[in-house]
Image (tube, rainbow, N blue to C red; front, side):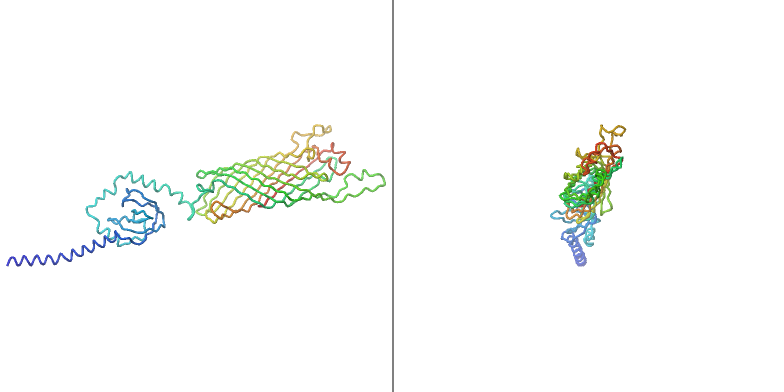
Amino acid sequence: MRSLRTLAALLLTALLWVPSAAEAAKKTKKATAGRGAAGPRVVVTAKSVLRAEPSQSGKALVKVKPRDRLPFVQVSPDGKWAQVKKGKVAGWISVDELDGVPSDAIAAGNQVQAPTQQPAQVETKPVVVEKVVEKVVEKPVVVEKSAPGRPAQGFWGGTPLTGPSFAVAGGAALLSSRFDSQFRSGLDPELFKYSVDFLPAVAVAARIGYTFGYKALRVGIDGAYRFAGGASIVVKLPEKDGLQPAMAPPGVTPPVLPFQRQTMAVTAHDADGGVSIGAYFGLGRRAEMSVRARGGLQLQAFLPDFNPSTVLPKELLYGPFAGALVELQTRSVVGFGLRLEGAYIPFAVRQQNPGARDAICLSNAPPGTPCLDSPESSAGFHAGGALALRVIRGFDVELGYRMLWTWTTYAAGTISERLRFDRDDEIKRRAPNEVLDSARRDTMQQTLY
């Protein structure tokens, strides 16, 4: 009887154990499948790295960035780490930095976590963990400041609005030259009331420079040259008789001189070079700007061909300038850029070819005529800008304009050498003793390229 009771108890125990073992095997199989089978793609939500082990102390394998879509492989036994692939590299990343991790895989990982797992292994060597994180996070900071799709970089990469720059262009120019004068004796020779107004010419321009940047500091050096010429200009002279009526014999009507138009060729040259220093400003995530003070040397040459009927002196002007430069550009490609610059020339030296100068202070001036040590004062300014369209990285198409205007005021008491070229013989005779009461020379070159 006792043996029958023992046999019945064993049968009942077997019947209860079989379903429990089957259910446990089913759960184990489901968890294993969630960890080992390739799942859907997951999306990275923050800058991070894939590690060799599911731990902060794991070796960093490869960087990942936000919006990366990576194949999901499995979760760690504790459900806190997910194994994904980037290219051929498989590594571990925290599930908190991912979107789209299957919830059943995380639950299965938590359910089958081994009770003998020692959490202390995750926290081993905390000093090493801090150093690894610091190195990985330190480098992408510059990328984060840039606009989506294009880091903020200079001409050849690196710091924004820095690097070399080079431009060549062809276009048109307008040339102007004017001279007004008054003589103490009231003399009014025709060659001293001429004007050359807005005469067209062909223009060529070139500019080269380099900008160095350190954090918000920008330091640059640049130079530019603009040429205008190849066109004939017309010098318009007023209709005058000079002093011929006084020279005519009694009873003889002097001839009336016709209105004269003298045609000649001219070339103009505008060159400047300078150093600039200032600051860089980031305008949000879309644009950037640099504002710098700029100083250097300005050179201007106005060279008309010699014409014995209408003598215009060839002249060269040079002097220092001080001004400002502003550069603005978007960070996108295709993008836009703007360059504005202007400067004042506080003083300059104007040299003219000997023998045809507008004025010169001579040592043999008549007694009582003041002859100043500084018989003239020259100044001027230049201003311009360019609008750029960035077609590809490091290549812009520009539309630019520049104006250079200089003037010279001659001191009272100076003598003009050009009087001897007047058509009136009496004016030529009086030229060595005639002194200026006032005189001013203006020269302007406008270039569109």
